[in-house]
Image 1 (cartoon, rainbow, N blue to C red):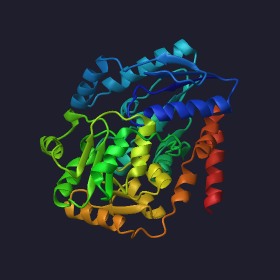
Image 2: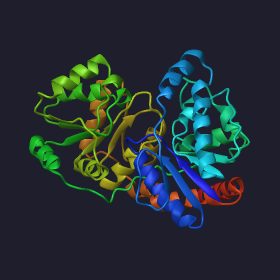
Image 3: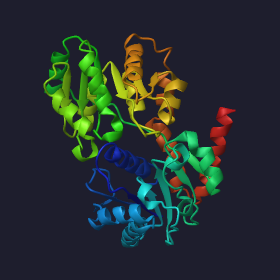
Image 4: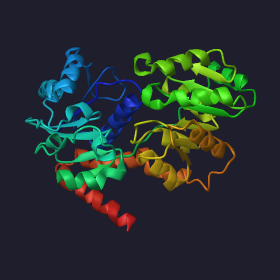
Length: 380
């Protein structure tokens, strides 16, 4: 068997996913030929294909949005098919599948493909079409999802096995830097509320900065690459004001994984009260690893996990008062018997190994069905 892993992104959690999945598949299937298309190479033995999204796709993204026709999806599949042919791949794992899926496009390709579908918006929100035409493709034998809350509903819609893959996050690497000491010094004993990771519009940074102006007894840490084009004018103004605030530390740049872990571990609370983001997030794993409660929006998968494992508080992200109250509850240790270890066990690298095992099986659909059946028995 010849496998191809594909992901054209490199920010956020994508590199961590690619590296760890490569390691697991190499271990599970040492005799398979494994290739991966990604912007940079990793040390794991496999054939690396340096790949970045063609510039034409940026235009096609706009055309598809304007017309509703699958211009971008078709271009994505043509590019992937070229890579699969070059590597003679039998099976492809799409680590980022959103833009390959469309409600009016069925790929006709000579290989099996399995998506890790990061954002199933049509099952969590009213916006956007349901890309069932693509997901029902005969060449797609099974589907992985990060959002376990929609797995059963998606399976019934597409008529094939759907299994939740853990939203893991290696947290052993933790490199203290001078920035870490600078944050401690600036906080001066005040509790640290951290918003760590790429800063875009859905992260709802504006609410946190408005709260910081009124709560000088809290120190706010915002650390991660900032995408100004993805912020509102109000958010840009608040970010500019924050540079002069003694109780705010801004680190507006890309963070290496180990430093990101170290900054997260310093926080007393993690802020993740996102807007229009009803999906999974590896912030949950980091919260459990470092025992730092989370504040999340009151709807969506993150809220379901926070409530089930009692690892933080939920709020209305459109209300600064609601967010403030949720942060206060976390800081006053009102989190009830949090099950940090329970969530970590369900999202560990060991669990990742178990769920990826069917991907390298000769009959992936049967292997995933068996795995699903075992999960249901465990829950019964």
